Structure formats: C-alpha cells, structure tokens
Image (cartoon, rainbow, N blue to C red; front, top):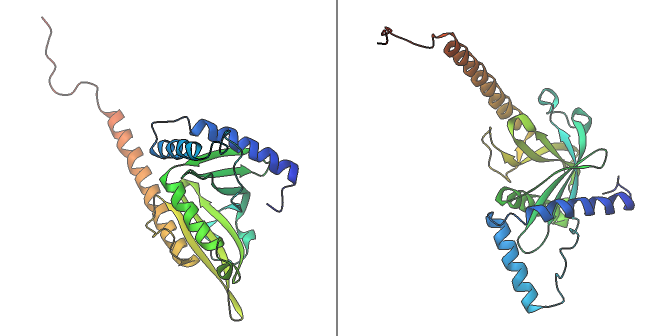
Length: 226
C-alpha cells in the first residue's frame, strides 16, 4: 500500500477486523462454519494459537478504478476513474475477504464467500508468481458496478510494445470465463452488449408496468350486489 502511510494502514486493519468480526458471527453461512471449525481444531492442537481474533494479514492491495467503456481500449490508466483501493485478504482457516477502501481511507465494504475465494485465487495466481510479475506493469482492479463486473487489468510487455490484458474476477451480466486473459476490445464489446441488453430490458419493463397501470381495476361485466 504505497500511497497509504503506516498509521492509516494500521487503522484500516482495525476497521476491516471489526467488520470481519461481524461476518464470522453469521453461523448460517457455509464459509463461516468452515472457518470456525478450522479455528477450533487449531486451538486444540496449539493452545497458544488464535486466542484472539486478531488483525487481518494484509494481502494484495490494488488501485480500484471505474470503467469508462468509451475509452477502455486505451493503455492509460487515466482513461478510468480511480475511486480507491481493493484489498484481497486471506485470513487463514479458509476465510477469504475482499475489502473496498475509498480514497478518504474509509472502508466501504467487506465481503466473504465462495466468489471472494475465487477472486483471491485468481489475483494470487497472477501476483504470487515472481516470473509472472516481471512482465506486467500498472496492475489494478477495474469495475462496472451497474453490470456487476470486476476484473484485474495490467499492461503486458511484449517485445517493443505493451498490450492491455483484462482478467475477469466476477461477472454477472456478461459471459466471461473467470481467470482467463482477454484483450480490452473483447471485454469492451461484451460489456457494451450486456449494457444495451439491460437498457432494453429496463425500457420493456417500464412499458409493461405503464400498460398495467392503465388497465381498469375491475375488468369484464360487473354484477350488481344483492
């Protein structure tokens, strides 16, 4: 976290820890039951381990940008709108979390669950390998909230030129294989198609809703009550 000083980083750890404490009280969630079971087993094997909930070990921290589809093919990060940072955290015992941090250093959200574990695995595969990191520059996370899309983006050095690589982490509206490398143009086209479909669906839903409101409350011949 190069842009955040040590004091602010320590406060963020405390804030994320407090939010995750609430998550691990949701015993109805499968990931929480696995975490609590693994934590209890660890305690029995080592009484000195995990006596307290502790602070999260800082995993990967990356800049978070909003996508501008019109300029997404550009190699420059300035073509996107930076809104803060995203932290990918492995809290051990099978608990993975993603924390979204605003530019004012406030933690806006913390998420856990299977999709989060998948995203952590993808990021860790890319950043956890030193040979893989040697050929990439300007790595960041980009998001299109309206399409529930999130991806890892970086510039790959290839001989004398650079290529923009996009690796989807999560996508609900557009079809992508998570963890696969795509070019920026392919991602832009699919997101534009998904956005156009969503707009058409919204207009159709609004039209149907208006048509229902214009109907009379009672249809057909009315009978006189006796």
